[in-house]
Structure formats: structure tokens, C-alpha cells
Length: 202
Image 1: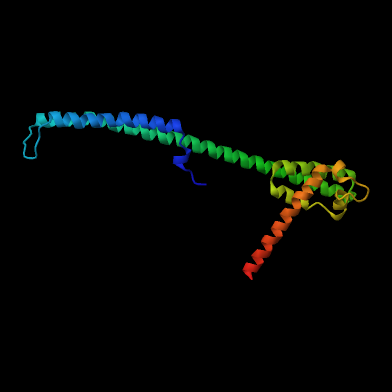
Image 2: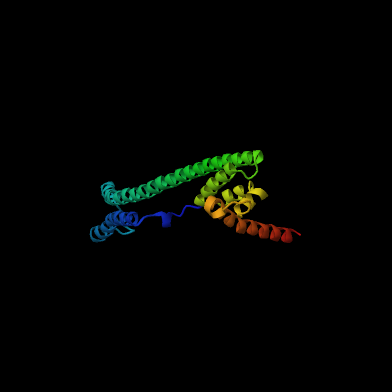
């Protein structure tokens, strides 16, 4: 995402830059007024070295203050935004690392559910794990985790969640049951997207 300097500049920074800018303009304004009132130089005038030196000192003294203030504005502005961009980058990296670790942990849980389901399809341990990881998927609000969870929901597990085989879906596995309800529209949306893609491609 492109960094927007205008939007990312806080109000206090704008006020500070305005104050510094005002102080930067004052020497130039003073130079113009003083030069108009005191300097009598025409294009046809002949200035000796002493007069040229005084002329240079006059303009140099005023413009150096302006240049210094202008440099201060530039340094303040870009130093602030450089630090802010670095902070945003590190936070983004930290969030990506955390997300990757969460998904790795979730994948390990999916693998564990699969192993239990292979040993004893739809067993209590498998259902409890499914309920736990269903809760994690719902808390994360990450659609990919819900879709990953869907890959281990077999016909036997689905029957258990629907209250068949003597199971009570809301009482025993509330998070897994809620995850199933969340997964259904995601699958339908993916199916519509795939259908539209094939229609456009064809």
C-alpha cells in the first residue's frame, strides 16, 4: 500500500511546521523591507568592492537564516515520516509472522484431527478437537482457517454435528456446529466464483 504523507501527518506536526515556516519567512520579509528602505542601487550603478561586500553580507545574513529554517522543516518532516514508515513496516512484519505461526499451529491441529478420524471415524476425541479448532477459526475471523477446517469434516463427522448418531450438536460441539454454518456460505461463494471464472474463460 502506498504511503500517503498528507494523511499520515498528524495535526500537531502540521502546526509545528507552520510555526517553523513562519520563522523561516520572517528573515526574508525583513530583508525585503530593509533592502527597500536602505539600499539605493540601480542597474547603472558602479559598486566598489566594499559596497559589494556589504551588499553580499546583507543578503547572505538574511537568506542563510531562511535556508537554515527551511532545512529544519525538511529534516523534521522526513525524519518523522521515516520513523513512522519503519514502525508500520515492523508491525506489518510482526503481524505476518504471527499469522504464519497461527496457521502452522492450526495445520498441526487439522493433521491431528485427521489422524484420530482415521483411527476411529467420528470418535469423541476427534469431535472435541474439531470443536476446539472450530473455536479458533471463528475467533480469528480468517476464512482460510474455516476452509481448512472443512477439509477434515467427513460424512461421519457431519452426521455427528447434525445431531445424528445420538449426538447433540449444540450441547456437545457448539463451536464446530457454528463453524459448519459459517463454512457453508463460503463454499457457495467459492463455487459461484469458480463457475463465473469458467464461464468467462469459455
